[in-house]
Length: 214
Image (cartoon, rainbow, N blue to C red):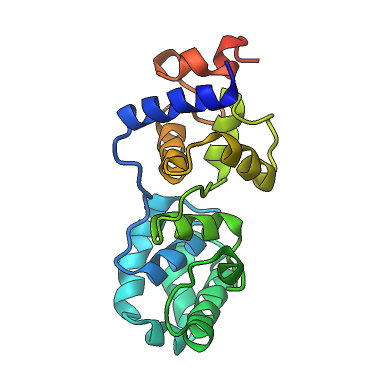
């Protein structure tokens, strides 16, 4: 079976299992998603969703974030880890959004990557979830692991290579939601250490399972 054909079956099955192919992070405004994604580095979405209500209440506007004392931001996000770097990036990003982008989150990869703490994964998530740009691939740890197990990629752990390989085989209009569904599947079934292959409905197309979980 060719990879494009396999991808089509997997897209359909994941859509059936996880109808809501959306980001787990909660946010009312685009720039708040940007900040929430920064907080999610080396931290669970669940923890981030516990932190952000108080953070967004304390700094209800982009201007408020831009004028924030970094130390106060650190205190509010302390439990998500790497809080000093994250607080610094959030405040710096707020200032850059105001000074360089008219207070709006930019809608191109090139411009998004200029923001402090923003890499391709974050930029792709913003492009897909906020701007609904077709063809984006969010190569996070779940996407990298599961796409390799399924045989959609060559097993590389390099996010850039995973993104490139998946772009070639996924329907552009489905790729963003497909990546979100891989996250849900990775949390519920295809865990890193002990995947629940016996209950996984992706088994017919999974190289990892069909090759004896080697």
